[in-house]
Each structure stands twice: as C-alpha cells, then as structure tokens.
Amino acid sequence: MASPLEQFEIKEIFPLEFAGYNISFTNSSLFLAITFVAIVAFMTLGMKNRAIVPGRFQSVVELSYEFIAKMLGDTAGTESRKYFPFIFSLFIFILFANFIGMIPYTFTVTSHIAVTIAMAMFVFLGVTIIAFARHGFKFLTFFVPKGAPWPLLLILVPIEIISYLSRPISLSVRLFANMVAGHTMLKVFGGFVVALGIFGFAPFLFIVALIGLELLVAFLQAYVFAVLTCMYLNDALHMSH
Amino acid sequence: MAKQYNSSSKDLKDRIGKAQQENAPKAARGLKEATAYSKATRLVAELVAGFVLGAVMGIGLDKIFGTAPWMLIIFFILGTAAGILNVMRASKDLVKDLEKFSEAYDNEIIDDDLEEDR
Image (cartoon, rainbow over all chains, first blue to last red; front, side):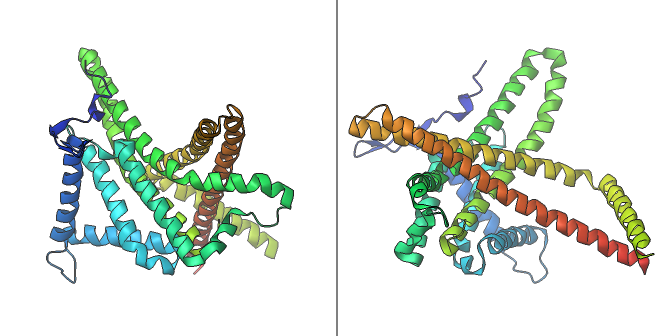
C-alpha cells in the first residue's frame, strides 16, 4: 500500500533548469497556479454584475471582504487600513490553497514548509520594516520590558529578541503541521477502510467526520494566519505587546 | 425587599442562561470546539518555535565560534524562556477574548430580562 506521506511528494511535470538551479514546473507549481486562477475567477466572476442588492455569489465575495476588513480594524486599528489588500490576499490565498487541497487527488501547497515559511518570512520582514520606518530606532525599545531592573535586562532583552524572531517559525510551522497532520490522518484511515474489508464502514464513518473537521481546520488556519499577521502589524504600528 | 428582588432576578438569569445553553444550536457549539482546537495548536506552535529557534541559534553560533556546547546551552535556555513568554502572551490574548465574549453574553441575558419585565 502507498505510504500516507506519498501525497506530499513533489513531482516534476516539465523539467527545467536555469543557471544551475532546478526550476522545474512541479505539481506544487501547478496547484499554486490553480489556486491563483481560482481566486481570480472567484473575485471577478463574483463581482461581475456589481448589483446594489447582491446575489448569492456576490454576497460570498462581499462577506469575505467584510470579514477580513472587520478583523483587521478590530485587531490593528484604523491606521492599518492601507495594509488591507495584503492581509486579504494572504487570507484568501491560504484559504483557497487549503480548500483545494481537500479535493481528492489534488496537492496541498500549504503542506510544504517552503511555501508557508516564505509567506511567514515575508510578513515578518514586512512588519519589521514598517516598524522601523514608523518609529525609527525607537522601535528597539520594544525589546526592553518596562520597569525591569537593569541587571535583569541582560537576560530579558535576549529573551524578547528570540521571542520576536520566533514569530515566523511559529506562524509557518502551525499552518504546515496542521495540513500535514490532517492529510496524513485522512490517508491512514483511508487505508484502514480498504484493509478491513466489510468492517471498513467504521473507519469510513470516521473519515466523514474527519473531513468535516479538516474543512474547519482549513478555514481556521487561514484565519489564524491572518489574525496573527494583524496582531504583528498592530505591534509594529503601536509598539504594544 | 431590594435584596430579595436581586436574588430572584439572579435566579431567573441563571435559569435563562441554562435554558439558552441547552437550546444553543449544535453547529455553534461545534465551531466553539474547533476554535478551541485552533487555540491549542496556536499555543503549541508558539512554545515549540521558541525551543527550535533557541537550539538552532545555539548550534549555529557554536559552529561559528567553535564554543560547543556552551552557546547551545545558553541559547536553548533563552529559547525555552522565549517560548514560555510567547505562550503567556498568547494565552493573555485568549483570556481577553473570552472575557469579551462572556461580557457580551451577560449583556444579552440582561437585555432579555428587561424585555420580559416589560
């Protein structure tokens, strides 16, 4: 039987090499492209009619917009409005990648840490640049806890810096680990269905429940990624823990 | 007299709260459990990220300066502390969310109370 981890393998579709680097078009690239096309189709087709009273499809698009706009305003304040396009793109991209991965025979791009850490590092670097651009070197006081006696600062400042540097790791590992764990579990129980023959209905029922849970996790992880990005943005804009 | 009224209104509030909980839609309860799951994964990731970063920084600095294993020991301890600090901060946010939620819930019950009085 196939290994439950086989679904995460990267396969080359069109082998390509450029300046010594392997830049082949892989199944991961294919599904990144599919995710992108799906998002563009979702947005443009949804807003095609631009009705004042939205239809069903348009409502979904508008609801997703309002959902993120409200979340951004609640967590990072009104000044964060200009970063809305980025947060929204991030959320929709992760959401679509996760949901497309739930379709059988597809590939989940967010199950690779290379993809998630690229997004997390982008967020981390962007937020740090925003913080320095806004507060200048005063931002460094973010790493100095208020009211601590100076001998303790020798320990506390490194801890604060490591805590800040660990943000992209926790952000990327969370998304990647959730996707890998969920899809592996589905595959393992799928194997049980085949192996148990007629008694396979028991794990089959479990899979039905598990798929429901995985759909929720797919949404929640996209949401958590977006919320945490907003919280980091809030720290950068207002320098508060 | 006033005290008696208060106690009976509290009693009513408790009963309404209980009834509302029993009649709460199942889907909402499921969603609450799912967000609990997302909170749990969030806390775990914060903790582990601190450990991992501390260990990686320690090993890297040891390789650069050839001071094995001292940097690893120091940075792993600092990383552990950072991980725990992250979890404390994250859980503080979660408690804040919870308080906001229960406050809104209480207000809702009081509003219902007033409506019934009228």
